[in-house]
Amino acid sequence: MMASSYNAKEEDANHPGAANHAGAGVVKSKKPDNTAFKQQRLPAWQPILTAGTVLPAFFVIGLIFIPIGIGLYVTSNNIKEFEIDYTGANIDNPCYNCAKNFSWNSTAQCVCAVTFTLEQPFESNVFMYYGLSNFYQNHRRYVKSRDDSQLNGDRSALTNPSKECEPYRRSEGSPIAPCGAIANSLFNDTLQLYHIDSNGTLNEIPLVKKGIAWWTDKHVKFRNPGGNNNLTVAFQGTSKPVNWKKPVFELDPEDPENNGFINEDFIVWMRTAALPTFRKLYRIIQKKPSTTPTLPSGKYVLNVTYNYPVLSFDGRKRMILSTISWMGGKNPFLGIAYITVGSICFFLGVVLLIIHHKYDNRNNSADIPN
Image (cartoon, rainbow, N blue to C red):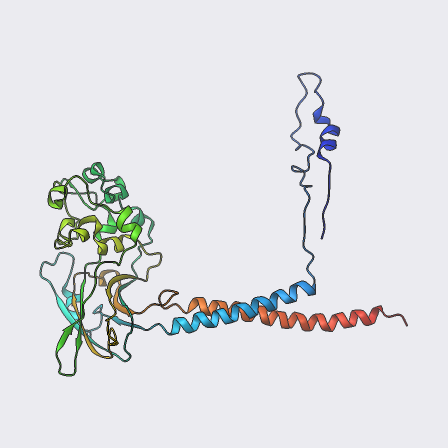
């Protein structure tokens, strides 16, 4: 342990700059004052690394990190996940015709059905996600292309959106609500899930559409324009985004708590992803009160109303079914990282212990007089 002491008052008293300068023509020196702070002479403490302190630290880190990593890895592997691609890029895919013929200007709907099999039953709540690949929501101009004041229900921003929304700020002379590139590219595929029983009957799986957005987003960041419960009147004088099939006040007309700017599908999409390959929560399949699995093993059909073309930018679309644990969704990376760091520390501890034991004995032998 190394430390130093000083007397700042004595230094300041002996410093020539403390005296009054004689004459107005004396040039002031640019040299820093002779103080402990400016001359970097403050008391300091520096640990002295010895084998007695370093080796135990390596072993302790290794013994702590390895069990934690194993626990995280096993927990992640116990999460069940199923993923199916329904882009329709290949000719043998059931959605091939929809993918080739559908565009943003298409008026007729295209529906395709994808059959798949679950080898294992899914217990507890099951979360359905949609996934996109090669979609850069993290692009700087894309991220800025929104008006948070408008999304928060500000009346002035509703009629006069931010210039950041260009070129999706106005349409045919009317302000767009919601404006911006993020809202304009809203994911609008409709997914329905059916279970095929032993008799070949299709049983629709109930999908919960509420509770998929963050609480703060739903109740703080996103609000409908106030002063009128009738959203048709509240959004009067505005235009729908260019790529949308219907205006914002018709996203969910059957549920006023899930319509307009507070529609949860819309809110989830507006929280941009950091990477070009991402997934967003679409629906929740709630656990059954009985002991019956939420999704029993067997054959299923995914009905897709194909509204979102992605082949123009070489994108991919997929549907993911997943359970969760106390640590969230399936993510083996964290467990692998803990195991790797713990193993490296433990290995270095063993190597340094051998080196210390070998050379320490040699040094002790050299110190013994003949």
